[in-house]
Length: 251
Image (tube, rainbow, N blue to C red):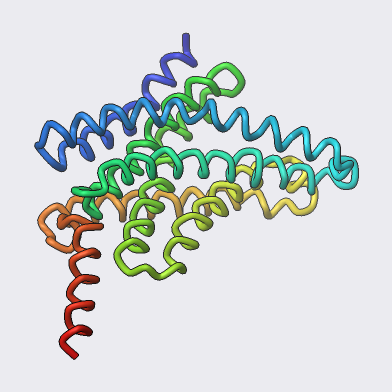
């Protein structure tokens, strides 16, 4: 009962953030997409399980798991957990962005990625309730790590689509993978056996993640009145491209 109560309390920040992102726009189509995305975020856990299973089998067959315990832990946290989860969230949100390509804005993309992260976090927290303690349940819910990483990813994916500079895609995808993996890895007992000072590492990662979360939510609030973020993302790129071609033809 205590764990269930802790789970319900941990859901409060995620639910509040969901309604904040959902209410950024009043259009029925936008809000309908938000409802679908939070469910899609929950369903991405299925893809994570399949991805992790395949990678686990390949890792076991390679024999590398017997080389070093810390290396095995790094594989588990950075590949089986972080890379698989962030990849599935990316694919899930990107599918909706592509489907709504004609009208989607940079702000929409940020919010939609964030909502997928919320959905994933809600389901994962429920699953972890059966295998972890009350403190970890509350920490996972209050910090909203999945939401922070998803908002960050959505921002830089939109920036990449606006500028077509590949560095923004790389930053938007791999920094969340790194930060997520580092958090999971920092909780490893094998890491603490090397040096006790690593006990502070998860707190540092949480602090950085909370900063990202707060910063992104403030940006979303400000961006809803900024044409830079509310204009059609792909439509503007097409228009700019067409303008450039017209100028070249005149020349």
